[in-house]
Image (cartoon, rainbow, N blue to C red; front, side, top):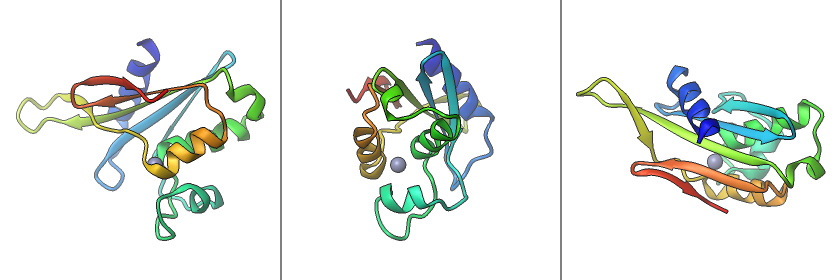
Amino acid sequence: MKHLNQVFSWAKLQPPIFRIRVAAGLQVKRNFIIATNSTRSHPFAKKYQKNQHAIHLHAETHCLVKTFQAGYDIKDLRDSTMYIARAILDPYTHEYRYGMCRPCVGCERALIDFEVGHVFFTTEKGIEQLW
Ligand SMILES: [Zn+2]
């Protein structure tokens, strides 16, 4: 899981946002586009987050926004794979480990709407595939 490790490494480097370090990477064509949770509001977030108060982009939706900004469109996403990793700093060992980051309902809806081909995410126990 080279790409997942790449995303995990990225998550580790982030300042925590809302106390969470999460990163999502989309392998699309020959590109790999990485994003983290964002504190910016975006119309995309309004459409896809869990409720009307959640106006900030999650790593997954932020990654989709960056992908479209990079010039890709929905046709390119069919063969794409998204990797989502959460890094948790263990207070005792001071090392990072995987954390649960199954996409929330809103992000899952966005991933379905934009026909992302495959989705992998970290859990406390390892890696799971959403589809
Ligand atoms: Zn989400």
